[in-house]
Length: 261
Ligand SMILES: [Zn+2]
Image (tube, rainbow, N blue to C red; front, side, top):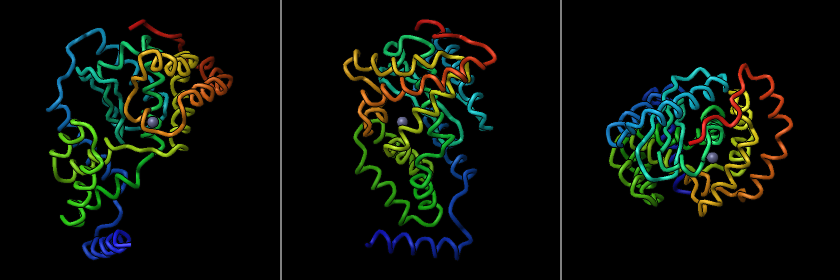
């Protein structure tokens, strides 16, 4: 109840100050700030072959989405199986996920999924709450950060909350992504279409789940934290293959499974 009151109160204060719900542009510019902080703090890979691969996959998938974001991607040198795309198109891949994926096509499947979360604006209300909290006043902003810290499980998340301010509140919310079951299913389906349009064999998408299983369940945290069981997701991705294949056949160029990693 108190949360409801607090929210409605902050809205009133915000209106008085001429502030309304943050727009997509405002959320995106906060994401850019958080991304710049991450680029300063993380080690960027110097592996030219892998960096080139990550760039071509990410930009092909981004282009296939048809969204006009300011796309950017970095390869972070870290033994952690992770990949993400912020609202507005700032992406990252961690070196730790590459040996698990095994092919460029499987990386395209993961990037398709992450890009779909951004283009379909999943989690937008949570980001808006964190951003608005900072815009309206420190009270709510601190609540967003403290709330985020309480939910933080990883060192990374704790570190990010130290960014502070509006970008920090955003980062905490972003890295605590808990998408709904329907959001995950949509990202799986839309992501598979993006990878197919980008020219990668969509049959690699269900195989991602097999490979993550074979690697002892290693998967990006947001893949693991969600409800649909991996077997179910694999079956879904298989059942969507006929539709995805139509996009693949119409792609300007077909790369198959791409290079092996
Ligand atoms: Zn997801």
